[in-house]
Length: 239
Length: 332
Image (cartoon, rainbow over all chains, first blue to last red; front, side, top):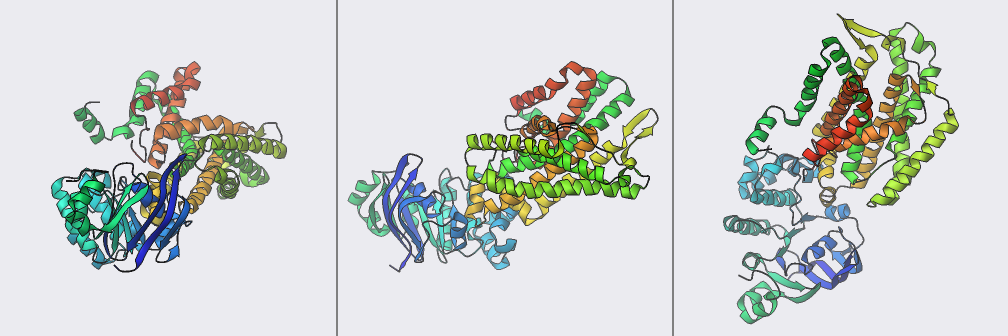
């Protein structure tokens, strides 16, 4: 694997009086899709939000391209080239698709070539360009959230459960889209859907009760039924 | 409301029709067109002045979830500063030169607005910033600041009611047939409308406006896109405070006599407007302010004993129907 783009070392995060992350250590190499698997409440979303600075790590360090970002403000982390697609997609429903995208474009101006590329990946974005984002379907909103994350070149995209509530046909389209996006950027994907995760992921970390309980290549996990039974029984919709 | 009825209602203008419906009901109850027109003009003028005071508060709450009970301090300061500037303007106000009259009034409003912006900056940095994300402390500290502000006004201007000279060009009434409308009310309506149009354009045609609208919906996501919402908030807070002061200046001219209680008196009205309009929404604030202005004037004429309660009843009725207000920036 290539050198680490993102590194978490012994990260502890509290939410109010609850201790959620218990010393998470994780390496995300540059390039490709890397998956964080785990059941509901295991600490996946907290991990992403802590990386993004939306919740503060009480202990431990987070390094991005070697720079300590543990205490940095969220906007500063974003400006380093980290995009975040939250579980609820974070769409501004009162704004149009164009306005949602314009907010994420540097200086509010679009790179026409890049925009054209996004329209090729997600044709619905061009079709509904002037529509209010609140009028989009769940799948289209997810496409908008991801389009917004890639309207500028990012080094790392943190995506939280993008398949949640989506129809299988849309999930298949998402797999293709993510493969395309991963050719130019690194994706850290939080998922419960093992089919989706295994179709995309190069490396996988399994989180349970705020701790990383397994870390390795996705291909090893896919090939080893015993390993799957051991770790995926901790979670989710394994099939 | 059944879905088909709801879609018909929306097709014909939706909640924006409410002031028209209120006006029609009042027309039937009042019976005399000339009285109805006078009351409607008074209600619209009052609504526009309340809109000036309320719109900033709505954005402040919508963007940063800050409960600023001290907002009316800016209304009070705006009123007193405008009164002083008008008093110092002497013959510019009372003389027959319309240009000097308007210049004096504009100077008074500008002085109030500038003070509101500067005081708003200090208020946000010193009072509000330490209590972000803590509603209870926000209420306590901003209420405390309001009391301190009123005491400061008492120290500077004294406890006696202060007369506010009205520029000669804005005195008197425009008489058409047997309908008489005060010129000052027309001016207040036009100024309020101009401010609304400017705000609407700023929010919908500029990048800062886009950020404010997005921030009202989901502040965290705006930060995740790389923008410092706290810096944006300072600008919104200053603009909101400046508008409140401008509204106070206009209200002072409307009342003609002001006391230190002017801000506290308006605070209830301003909060009613923000709540029924929907948090974070300029259109909602305008709609709420017009409804409150019309209601106050119609009810004061038709059922004088009900005038104090009427806007509370209006707020309760609207919240029972639409718990998030008439046009909230974020639905649900």
